[in-house]
Length: 74
Image (cartoon, rainbow, N blue to C red; front, side, top):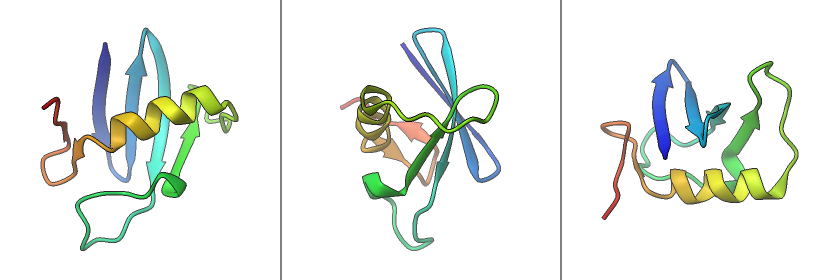
């Protein structure tokens, strides 16, 4: 299960009871983000350098409706 919560310019994402802090750098005029703009940190704000975590985040944020900060599960 995935939980997504926006905190300012950050997103708090919980995947399988593991919390991550995610920074998305996207253009204001876009409703999607590029995978290269995702920066993932652990609970202690140390950058995560695991391809599997990035793959999970990319798949989550490709489904996010940034206007409402919700995951579109369609």
